[in-house]
Structure formats: structure tokens, C-alpha cells
Length: 212
Image (cartoon, rainbow, N blue to C red; front, side):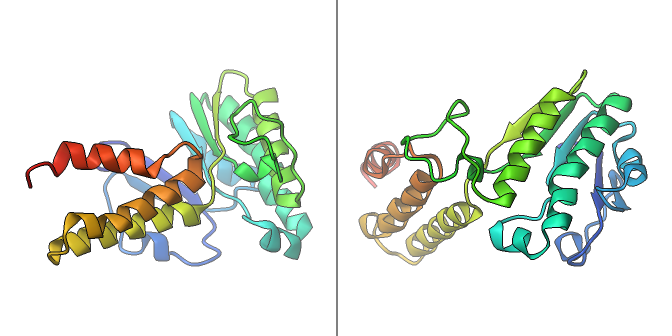
């Protein structure tokens, strides 16, 4: 976002340190140390901004079960504070990171935004409650909710793409190196459920590998 010319303000209480932004300095970057559960800190963070990307949460069932009260405060109560502050300060759009866990153990095949919700864990329930409160209290704010699949799938896909690049740079023939691409596409299929690895690979080779 900074590279695209946006002004960026980060609100974080840095429970796990500043490793993620260590050494990051930019004239358009402002860092606010504070708690998303604190209305004063949230007001400071959202004042005079056009859009908010809400990522703060205790993620996953094991972590949430360690301290259910803290989970409810951070994963749900803080969302109420955030949407009210966004309304008060005239934020145009709020992008909220939810989770595919809101669907539970759903056997409906490919899931969409219209699929039945069946949250079975505390984490999933706080995501559903937060989504509901965002739309119930949105006022003039435009909420955008993303229900991301597991981070591991993206990391696996990226690792396989990097392995493919390394193999090709090392002189491995395209067909052999393509096993990594097939694995990457399989990870993406786990992620979104609509990738057919062989079809995509056929297109890749038809477009880039013919006569090479």
C-alpha cells in the first residue's frame, strides 16, 4: 500500500513484538501502539482515514480456548467499538478478515457467501457475531467481509511455486519441474475448490512452453 502511494496507519498492541515491521520506516507510515478493545486508541487510529483493514483477532480454536473471555473481548466486543468509531469518523469502507470456520463441518461441497453458516467453535462464533454486528451497525460505512481459508494452503502453494522456479533455474526440464506446479495448484484447489491442476498445466505449457 505504501508503494502504491497510500498513507498507512497501524494500530497494534504488539503482544508478540514488532518483528513484522522491524526496520520498516516510511514517511507515509504511522504506527499507533494501542488496544483494539480501547475506544480511545481505536478513535485515534481511524480518525481522518478513508478505509480500515481489520485483522486483529485471537485466531484458531486452541488459542481461543485458552482464555474465552479475552477471546470474546478481542474477537467480538472490539468489533462493536470499531464499527461505531468508523461511523463516527466517517470511514468509507471497512474490510473485515473473518474465517471459513464460520461454515463448520459443512458437507455442501463448494461453499459460497450464501452457504449455510454452522459455527461450532468459540472462534467461529465470534467471527459470525462480528460479521453480523458490522452489517447491523454499518450506518454509512461499507463493510467488506472476507472468509479466508487456511493460511497453510497459501504458504504451501507459494513454497511449491518457489521450488518450481528453483528447479527450472537449476536446469531441470519443464515436465519434471511441473510436479511442483501441480502441487501448488492442488494447494489452491484446497483453498477455493475450483482449480483443476491438469487443465491449468495444459494451458501453461500451451502458452509458454511450446517450442522451448
